[in-house]
Structures are given as structure tokens and as C-alpha cells.
Length: 522
Ligand code: ADP
Ligand code: ZN
Image (cartoon, rainbow, N blue to C red; front, side):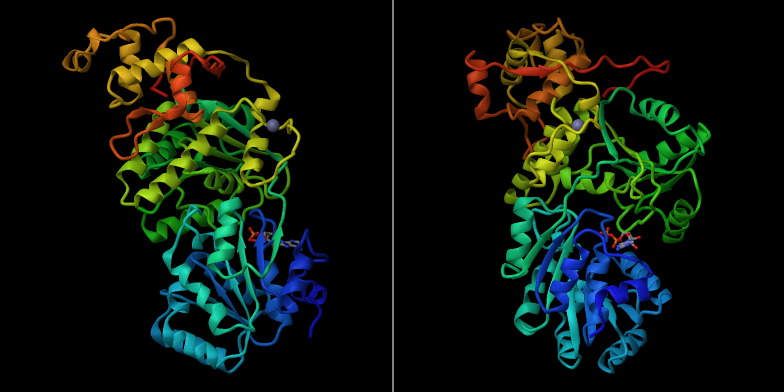
């Protein structure tokens, strides 16, 4: 049997293994099952590609994304490895050729979409082949706890039953404790060995700013820290396609080479923009989350979020595209109360089951916890992935400019009472209008000018009330109604606060920098 290190040098051209690669590879080559958790960029692919070449037969790699498969297969072919991909992009004739080559033992790796792998015909074909191993990439797709659940993945458990003697290796970059357990159970990997690499990306500086005209804030950030137009490559994530387009042309107007990427663009346009981003210097890619899976560009200097990502896993994965070369890079985000409401509404209006919605809500809360923390952001992030005991990092905004906190019990009580008096049926905008004693049609229509809480909050301006409300959500004292229209609701935990039995500490948000243009709500 060929020696792994020899394969690494002669086929892949690398002098040495990284981190736990060698251990994982030895385990799989010897026929063991493995669950591999390594951050993006750590080098997971080699963990199955090297064993595929060491062991007899063809390695079957399950991968959820056609684009990703295609990249990998092309890269392998260039190295002289006999690899192919079976997916919906193949014609039936092409597929038959690949299948024949598999049977004839002429392929080392075959990438397959999960839905094809579990087809009875395909499984029967596999019985006819010599199989080196099964690799299950993006293994978090099997878990409803993961951010990218794919029902097809559930059926992959049958691989263990049908091919008990073939080693399986499942790989993912994103798995918190529950997801990890879920993956092991659902893929029948409890007996396998787990390889968990550290999730810390020390060269990434995390910063989360309060939104106050996010576009201007972004422009200032790019100007001050990334040399302005044309200097450095980065990604700007937005939630909607429309916002991607708007933001890209706004940045272009400021002289940036800003390209757009979202699922609504024609495939050739998307591919062309992606190619330019990979090949040229100094391009800002403005994108929805459709962009990035499998993008391996080492010198992305910043990843900016103009909207909240869906979860901490998503945040980690998206920001993880920065600084893969190990040089300093920025993860920068602007977030505001409206984002919190929007995501709450997203969950509310989705078709998901109640159980699923509960999970999504917990994930949203964990994300808000990161946004509102007064602790080191990296600590909060890493603890979510089960890594306790990291010291404060010195490379995030809360470490660099410690946040002051103050006794906000009175403010919290006013806000909570106002949510209660208005019937727990309204979002932040209206609740704040009532607190400030505003006079408008909606207030008069609901008779909210007659409430005892009308005008009790004039000591704070609206944007600071937004900060208070966000923090109350993050602290679990308020929740966002995900069955209805994203209205604020009181939670059980807020009772002692209302009764005056519990103190609430709030962070003092840095005062927003006044821009020249008019500000939009944050
Ligand atoms: P992941 O799948 O974990 O995100 P990849 O497998 O795409 O990461 O690897 C990330 C990059 O690191 C790739 O460019 C790969 O060629 C490189 N790489 C992986 N292992 C090694 C190694 N042992 N030595 C040098 N480069 C490596
Ligand atoms: Zn820190």
C-alpha cells in the first residue's frame, strides 16, 4: 500500500501534513471510521483524498454542491488523479461512461450528489465495484441543528448497513456540540473516531458595530483600514438580492471594483464575477450567502456583513473566508434592531415545523448574544463551538475598546412595561414611539397615548432605545414572536425584573459617528 506522506509529496506537491491530517489519514487508511471537524481552510479535502489513493478501489465522495464537486475534480485531474463527478450536470451517456470506468477500477475518486448515491440502481452498481472509502463532505447537512439541513443526507446512514467493511469519513467545518452528536448518530458513526481541530482563527479581527447608516459605515471602514478603492479584496454580505445590487452599484459609484453575486443572476454572470474575484486583485464581491461555499481565495482581507447572518455557524463560516493565508484580516459587521426583527419575521413566516422554528429561535438568540456581549467576541464564538477556556484575545473590538456597562434596570423596566401595555403585539418602532410620547396616527388609532407608559422614556433618544431593546432580546428578557409578525413578547425571565427583584446591566453603545448624509434607521 502506498505511504500517505509519499502520496502527499508526489501527487499533491506538499512537503508535510498539517495539523491532524496525518492522524486522520492513518486512521482511515487502516479502515477506521472518522468524524472530522476542522475549520474552513484547514485542509479537510486531503483527509480523504490521500486515503483514496492509498487504498485499493474507488473512493466515493458525497458532496452537496455541484460547483464544489466540479472544482475539486478539475483540481485533481490537473494533478493527474483519476477523478470524476456524477451529478445532474452530466448527461445520461456521460454518466454511463463514468459508471463503467468505476466498475473497471479506472477511477480513484468519484464525487456524487447524495440523492444519486442512495438510488437503488447506484447502490447496486457500487456492490459491483471495489470501494476504497466513503467520504461525506459538509456532514452538518445531515443535522437539523446544522444551518444547511438536507433531507437526502439522512439516507446516508444506509451506507454503513450496505457496506459495513468500507471505512467512512464525515467532514464538516461547522458543528457545535449538539450538531456534532447529531451527525454521529444520524450517520451511524458513534463507533468512529472524532478528530476535532481548534476553531480559532487568530488572524481574524472581529468587530460588530451598531448600525447607523451601514453603507457609510462600510465606506469609512474600507477607506480607513483597507486602503480604499482597488486596494484589497473582500466580501460584503447582504441579506437580499436587491440590497446586493444597490450596495454594489453604490460602491462602484465610490470608485470600487464591486461585483454582485446572488442566485437571481444568470449563471454565466455569476461564474464570470466569481472568476474575476478569484483572479483579479482588489475586487469587492457584494453577495448573498449564495456566494462562498468552496471559494478558496487565500488573500481575502475582509468580510463585511451589512445584515445579520442566519446563525453563529453561518457567521463563523462566512467570516472564515477572510485571511486564509494567515495574514491579518477583518470580520466586520453592522447590526441594528431592525435586523433582529427581520430575522424574527423570517422565522415566523417560514414553512418550518414548530420544532424547527424553536431551533432557529435559539440560534438567533445565540447570535444576538455575540452581538451584544461585553466580553471578548472570540471567547463567545469559540465557546459556542465547545471550546472553553480561551483567554480574552486582544484582537476583537470588545478587547481593544472595552465596553462600559451601567445599571439599566430602570430603562429595562420601562421598556418591558411598554411592551406589556401595548399588548405584546408590536415591533420596536412602535414601542419606542410610545416610550417617547410621539403623536402619530398609529398611536391614536390604538389609543396608546392613553397608556401609563406613554412618554415615560424621553430621557433616551430613539437609537439608544433600540440598543436597549436589542440587549433585552439578547438577554432573553424579550423574545420576538415567531408565530405572528415579529412582535416583541415578554418572557418568563422578565418577571423578576418587572417586580424590581433583578438588576439589568446594559452596555453603553459607543455614540454613533455623525455622517454628512442623512442617516437611515438602524
Ligand atoms: P477545507 O476543505 O478544510 O476548507 P481545503 O481542503 O480546501 O480546506 O484546503 C485549504 C487549502 O489548504 C487548499 O488550498 C489546500 O491545497 C491547502 N492545504 C491543505 N493541506 C495542506 C498541506 N498539508 N500543506 C500545504 N497546503 C495544504
Ligand atoms: Zn477578544
